Length: 509
Ligand SMILES: Cc1cc2nc3c(=O)[nH]c(=O)nc-3n(C[C@H](O)[C@H](O)[C@H](O)COP(=O)(O)OP(=O)(O)OC[C@H]3O[C@@H](n4cnc5c(N)ncnc54)[C@H](O)[C@@H]3O)c2cc1C
Image (cartoon, rainbow, N blue to C red; front, side):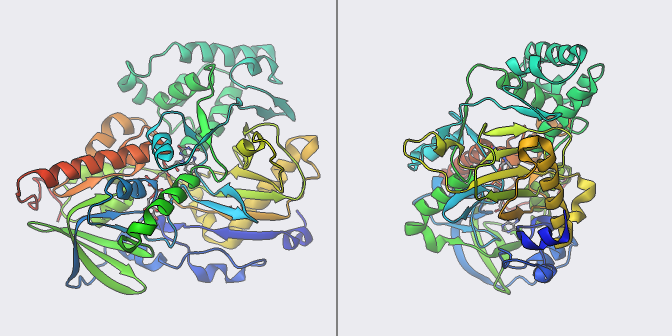
């Protein structure tokens, strides 16, 4: 891309990078274009927590039945399930939603992360309960490879892939073999090995396809992902019914609706821009210390629901048993920028989610796909969301605006080279939302061995967040985890009073 075009494009970058914290604002002052949409600078605080630096712990200023830490979908759902209770929800950003956060361009919503849900999941049911009807996607995913658009990849599409007969046969053999596996009966065995082991002997093009698909959906390529998650996804992609549901803005629509539902009555109990720095179990309560507007505060709770990712959770709680601490710290997370390109004319509306193996982005979705099926709808801008997960080794590329801009430029270049009809595609704006550690990798053994150790309630603390459920990071898991944590908490509160403050055997100091 030429410098002129680079300067001409409006490039907006937002989101958190380091240790799940917002990016250092000073890095963004070199930005050309509009003011970056950032939510404050908690960079230093999070790194101090990571580096084990002690914080003052002021006297307790308020007491609550339940403190919920983290206002992503899981924390918001926990708050919703605790309506009527004295809960306090604390979130480090100034907006709700975590990885399920939507933004808008001139009133048109697009996803900055989480995209679609599925029929009958805990999240779809919760959405319905709060008046949000997720709409069916109803269109199997195509793949664009060697300039060719191949419809319905995992069903009729395999015969149309622009490969040799033997490569196409390799894809079909894999489909037959993976469809025959029973993920429920063989969960332990499938979860113990990486997908790449099962891809040995097949055409390299198949591995390339799964590397793109896995990175996008689970943050892991075939060498890092357990085979279990691929079996489950292959079976659902080659099934007759498309069970996926979404709304413009993706799963961020659920976060927004949850916040909108809760705020009128519980707004005072929901605090943003509050970064938790420590959680100290006491004899009959837990002390939670957080930084808000530069001030340290401590609140006390009978019970705490931790809806933060485990690698953060492990650093905040004192006294966790060694095995649980180790389990939490063994989660790996994919750095995951998401790029939205806004076009002032229709560029691509042929499918909801299109796979593009071998490019700097894995796939892209059409933001208003489900609205296009609504009577009377007229598209104003064509907004395409490009999923651009990167290797853990390259996380530092997200630390500077220049690094981010390079990623965005490469994505645009690759898109223009993807097929002849995109060669002249010129976005009027490019938005990037960067996250340093948003999606846990379903590494072999994580689901069957690590999560069951990590998600055990500890004293008065229960664990929500999608990484308490697995096998992959999903919105349904975030809601399910919240429900489990709230049920456990309610049960404890209903039980006769007892002390759960004592640290377990093998606890860390
Ligand atoms: C790019 C991308 C695409 C995805 N696509 C899909 C999809 O299509 N379908 C699907 O089902 N799932 C998808 N997912 C996964 C899905 O978004 C997540 O599983 C879900 O949003 C997790 O919600 P959560 O509340 O469990 O965790 P999070 O969203 O991680 O929320 C945790 C919250 O805790 C806050 N927090 C962290 N540290 C602190 C602290 N010290 N103090 C206070 N607060 C803190 C964070 O700011 C955050 O708001 C995607 C994820 C990503 C990143």
